[in-house]
Image (cartoon, rainbow, N blue to C red; front, side):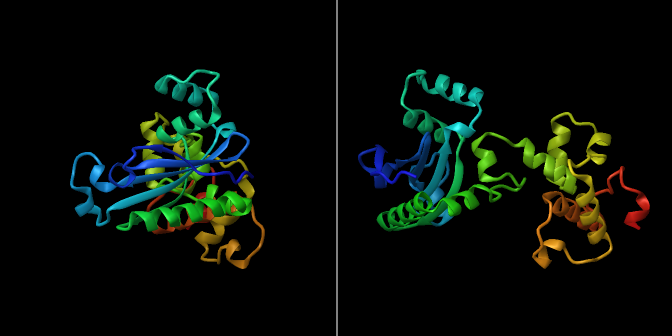
Length: 246
């Protein structure tokens, strides 16, 4: 991965009005540090409300993972031509929410905060495994990963949430027009490990992942669904024999 010099775009008085640092992290890949002064945020007295003066966020953009329709929308919104450099397109993506949030820092010493953010960003640049792990971490209440958020994908997390019986995911599915019976009978791609995870949870057995064995992702989804059913926050999937849940 590349490890070139940091570039800067933004106000000359960065501590007062903020700005953005960026580096190329590989072919069509870029890492950004968005630095902001909370007193410059619109609306409320944010410094008093949040309790810190500065905020820095480490963001990652891989243009090859963002759907072309999203890239086209960014180009239109920012009046970017097809021949514009990738760095400017990537900058537009992180402005419009198409980025992976890798880390964030808050504090009252702007220079120290920026040094910490740069050090962390450089670690991601030099350690690809650490970057990949960060991209696969959930970053919101729905369970979307940083990678999914970069691609503008909320449906993958919604689908996993529906399988687990997550209330927020089910509400979002309903708002998207999915019928109740479809939500309740949602069928996982690999049903057997889901069923095993579900029955383990229902019967009070330890989660297989806690035994450090390699398992299918559907097992964990099923286990979470079983826990939610036992807690009374979700219904049993209609395709599973109701006797299993007793």
